[in-house]
Length: 224
Image (tube, rainbow, N blue to C red; front, side):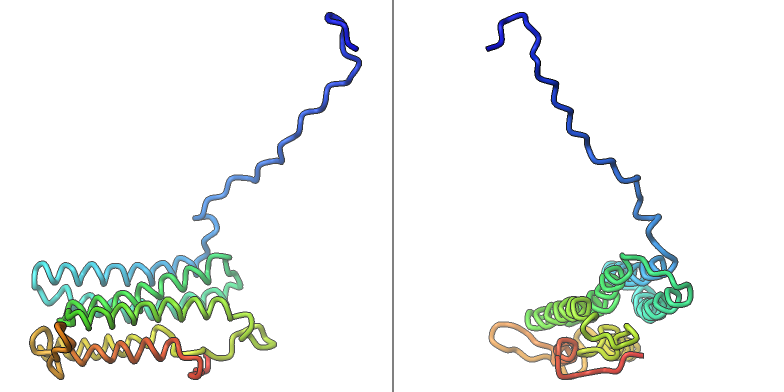
């Protein structure tokens, strides 16, 4: 029993030491040149969307032509980032995710916004365009999740399951031809159909076909 005023014979317990803090790191320092090119891809897609909105506000064709041109530019950057990473033999841990996120903007959302801008604004059209974008998201998620399984002895993926999302540039090309021929808005090819209380432009079915092809497990496209 310890009497008040007497010192305790127990040694004080040592204070628990905190683990050392890791050195501060900024995300910008982690980005490689290839990552910067990937971000350029995403910037092209976002700018294309903004230009579509500007076209709707001002009805000036030059804005929409610029929106069309930016998407092939995004494709060039999408191809260049991988080439640069291989040449420099430097890939960041962010590279794969950055590439997928940029692709869904430039080759998923932006083409859908172009279609909506040019007149595919019925409820059925909108449902198809949403389906197309969601298929693109699912396709990229599947690729990221299965890349290691699909990789050959060289560590490189030999083929794509489903069509790659940049194939949506074919749809962008179709829309570009329609825009050049003034076959847009009320003059869209194949007209429109009333299905129930809502409108469908049959041209939107191209987006449904493209989305379905992206998520198909039976389509195997050799990867260059």
